Amino acid sequence: MVQAEEKQVNTSNIRSTSMFAFTIICVGQVFSLLGTAMTGFAMAIWAWQITGQATALALVGFFSFAPIVLVSPFAGALVDRWNRKLTMMLSDLAASVSTVAVLLLYVTGNLQIWHLYLTNTFAAAFQAFHFPAYSAAVTTMVPKKQYGRASGMLSLAQNISGVCSCDGCTLAGRRRHCWSHDS
Image 1 (tube, rainbow, N blue to C red):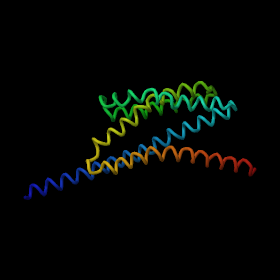
Image 2 (spheres, rainbow, N blue to C red; image 1 turned 90 degrees about the vertical axis):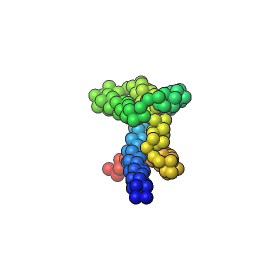
Image 3 (tube, rainbow, N blue to C red; image 1 turned 180 degrees about the vertical axis):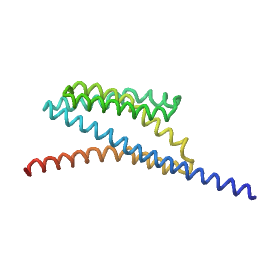
């Protein structure tokens, strides 16, 4: 009887620890996805400001989403065969590398519109693997009883980045616009 109680306590402790670990990862993913979304939004606005053409803006968006659409059908099957943690890390690394490349090109004065097309394509191709790896990792990290909660957190992380990136950039643009008229 005592062994059964100890086993039950140990199992519940493991479950609460795994949910806590998933929560930490989920919060990190919110910031990662938010940064990626804000960077993409800022690049599209920069393309518009530099060229003054809607075509450039549309092409930045196209090269941000087309690779995801093309690679996603294969990504899920491949992610099931690969290490999910490594896949998530490589996806985040690819987004970071492309952002740093754009930053370096911008700082040196060499950034051109085609660089955005290329870096967005590169990052988006890796991003197609990120969400399947992340969502599949839920089943290995969280007990079955917590799947509903984990699914809600997963959805929140995905959607909050899209909403906040556009709203945050819009508010920042309005603030900049207001400050530029004050002087």
